[in-house]
Length: 158
Ligand code: HEC
Image (cartoon, rainbow, N blue to C red; front, top):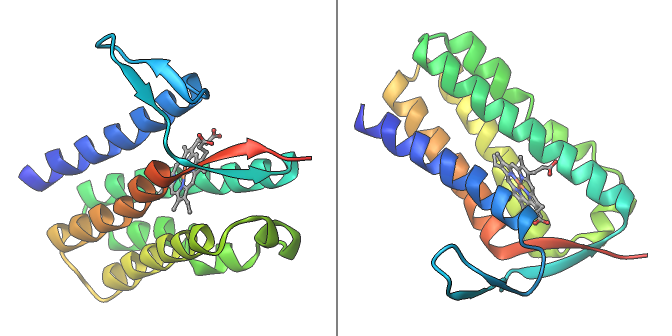
């Protein structure tokens, strides 16, 4: 139960982080407490095609995480594995070379780890891991979302 709450909190933080990122694209903004907050995430200049592709992929990962969380609640291992595989490494390998080349190595590495982590969830579910173990793995997977969102933001490049 505690884990579930911690997990939802992580998800909310992740989503809140994204919402904030979208409303605060400038380097200097005034936070809700009235204090100036700096956006010190590393800018990653991308073409609009790359931005569209990567963001579609991230939305797919969010949907996968949602599917896993729901299936864990139902103790449905097959549904957990199926949801996890929609964002596994195979999905990442379908990324066009052109797009890969626009992204920094560290960024790509983090994306790859996130996808591998989804595969880890699928493997755990397939081998009979219990709900607590799958929840823990989902929490670990969401750490990659949090880490990448804290580190990077997209900017446009022509
Ligand atoms: C390798 C880096 C990276 C990882 C890992 C990552 N994201 Fe993101 N995500 C981004 C970037 C960059 C943006 C755009 C943020 C910006 O420009 O302010 C983004 C945006 C998003 C968006 C908004 C999409 C849209 O259409 O605007 C969602 C939702 C999202 N991420 C979910 C997730 C989830 C869930 C995970 C983990 C399962 C995740 N992301 C992992 C880099 C990443």
